[in-house]
Image 1: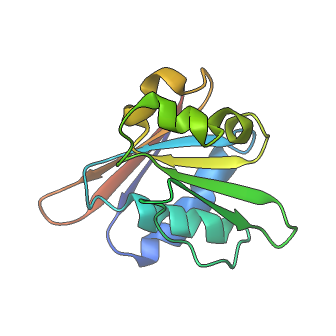
Image 2 (image 1 turned 135 degrees about the vertical axis):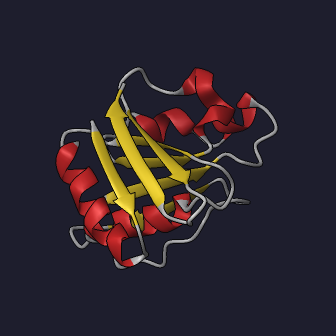
Length: 140
């Protein structure tokens, strides 16, 4: 289990490094949180912590972006917010990415719940009234 309170954007880099270190053998991370909770921003920090210098943006319309680490390892970033049905995930070859052994960072995983692997890290971002956030993660 991992938990961290985020008071500012400056805290995200440390949280990203801690999350990766805590779940060092895991590659599938599912990010849950309301719209505007900071899922994409946190994923940017995770990609940096993994050594990517690529421009990390939300794949809202493309559904998937690929980034590379300094060692040319792939990081796949999914955003299923606009998916209309499960068939779209199959059409983009979702399973090939998920079972590739590469990092897969999934926003809006609740849209494809039935396709999620049994073993993954569930990351929840909760926004508080004072605009701080709590990030919790657990292996499921």
